[in-house]
Image (cartoon, rainbow, N blue to C red; front, side, top):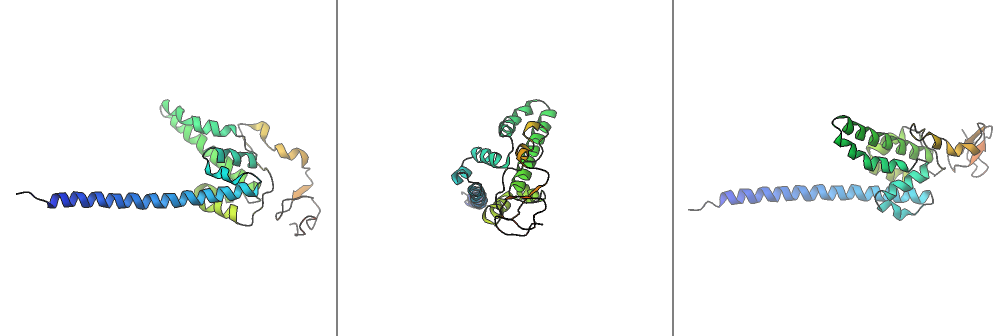
Length: 192
């Protein structure tokens, strides 16, 4: 006699695994779509091509360009896994490089849209949601505002050459205004 019950149990296990894989794939696809839409909208706000948000690495390059972060960081991060061939230290260095670039890029992105540095925590930890909020919300692109980079120091505050210490920016439209200005001459919003 042949026992068909063992084949039914194996088939049920494979079916269960297939259902779990499909559910995880659908969730991952949804998250990817949210990230793409957010990146597309962010790039459009900064007068860059929105379709660049679809292309991996190129979308990071475009975000580097709008935030003032040195794009050489992309190559460094892409090549950093090769450090893993060095026991222990290589893996730690690779992780450190990736974390540093993520913080550098997201703090600079938050600043470039007039957000506080703490907004970068959301951009790092919940990037699809916060990119979507930044892209679809009322935040305006105010120009390159890079975080101080300890590696590429020559790029630090590259845009500050034209900005005097007596200047500040309108949080609504991003226009540079004198320090003692009460209202923005471009949009009329009160300057705080």
